View 1 (tube, rainbow, N blue to C red):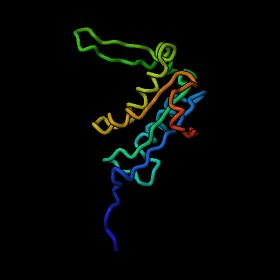
View 2: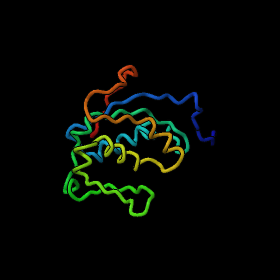
View 3: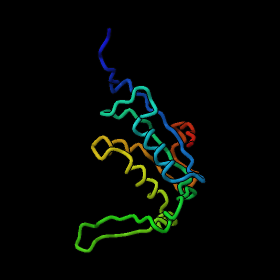
Length: 145
């Protein structure tokens, strides 16, 4: 009986490219699918301490929807580091001006807050429109349920 746990080697990990279309889909649902693909949880070779995930391209972020009262109630905050440097932006303003940043922040928050998570987020490409510059990688479509 073999009692060893399989751990994929760096050369054995196969990375694919996937495209997710965010048109008329909730921002959070798209973000969870993207985070799952980036971590590699959809693969049988998933290992929590290794980057076994794939590359993800999210298109049409400007057409993603926020359900409920999130457009008016959700607030994005960051601090400049200076006294009184708290910056606040409502979700409505963020979705109008930079919808790709809202999607990026949603996915980033769902990944591990470690060196591994910072490595995974580099494999994410986010675009507000349907055009993307990664056609050469021959990405496959990924459907969000």
